[in-house]
Length: 321
Image (cartoon, rainbow, N blue to C red):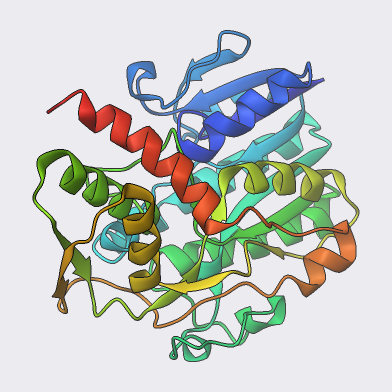
């Protein structure tokens, strides 16, 4: 059985490929980036550089596949998605062409990685937010650009299942983080960005840190190991509705900085950039549906995950000093 992972050169894709290979699976890993820019390249996988948004290439990638994990998308942290709305929406070409290719190839199951950015903005205006349930995505008012593409592609996956019999499954990821991912360059998310800033402060002795917004915006963050496990269980399961895949441990950005200061053993002077992108005021994952279906929920604590993430970034930056 051949399993295709698109976006395999990215953060989540690289970890997923590694886990599938550890189970003895046959994996075709696809990413548009040159292989020297992949975060992980695995000898055991058939690694292909190609563009899933091209219909012809998508057909070639899907050929002979039993399952497809479609993780490929143009995305990043809040700084990227707020300033690249058109680029984010163009990911609909990847979603469309991979679904069409899967149908034509006779692929049995298709996983689509959606996002908590699909949720309605009026439910995310308070840092003490009520955790978001799956039905809170409608009436539609998602994150402009990126969130609209994700919500549309969710519906497309649904209708490919209903109209064509392709068994599609959808997970709404909530802020996935961990080692072997983006931590600089403008696409990084908060855990990686703050870990980088903390590590640099530790290495240089410049004990200051810039924080986007007032630091009181709240989120939950899911460690990569929980994401990889959950994604596979969602694809293998019988539930056909989009489901949250995220931690329910809600923290503010200031609290995350507190944790990182404790890990690094330093205290920093904080400068707040109130005009920087910061997204919705509060967002958390309601895991009731996931827990009822799968019997567990993402539970690796933020501190445990940040210790590994910070350590990985620190070791890389230490080589530059």
